[in-house]
Length: 345
Image (cartoon, rainbow, N blue to C red; front, side, top):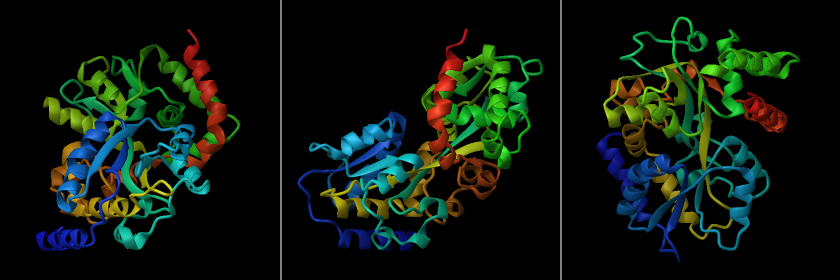
């Protein structure tokens, strides 16, 4: 954003600052690594600009945990980062405020994927194929990921049925656009598990982005699926030459939602207005490799950051969006089957 426009937007924000509330605004991210990035890029600058108290917390996700927290008399969450399923269920059950778009910059200010009835896009969560370029001087595909004979070594994979089945099918030659049609068919799930069977002896499982980056950096795996932000952060921190394959990556959207009845509603809206400025979202991208949903973000980034931005048009066009509706309908069936598969010796 041009410096003059940014200054004008900040002036508007300060002029309309919410009155002090009984407690600080509490912004709840997902995981310690993401919390640290959100604090540096968003929470501290927001508090500095507005003079309002703001703090950050974390949660691990899950609709049951969300219901328990938001219905508790001791609830102190004012903004929570929700995945698509949590957002849809929470909105339908009245756990979240409806989005007042006029108060957060207007719908047209955001990318379409960041707009919903109860949420404002917080970040794209993009799982990519990552590798160490110093050890593997090619750009691998998911088919190469499975080719142990050609590229010997361990592989890192998410310990979650969501993501593991899609990646297995893409490795087996299914086009990204056909993944959920294949999984919905009679033989699609069998095909995915048979493909996982081929790789089972070589898999090192990860459950968090930090774990994925760690096993790649330590050399425990030759290549791994991993959240792109975790790979970018680890590469910068440790001065490593990690590669990211955007083709056939898998993404979903995490959104900010305001719990129903928050006493800090106005401050939460102002936080969203502030963090929706491309100049502020650029701070998050520079610090963590994660991106928000504001229009114009990528155009304001240097070319080297545009290349690793999950919302770069070329990167998004090459990726598959996780089908929330499919998993809402099938996770209760496929989750236990995946757990049983994992338990086999």
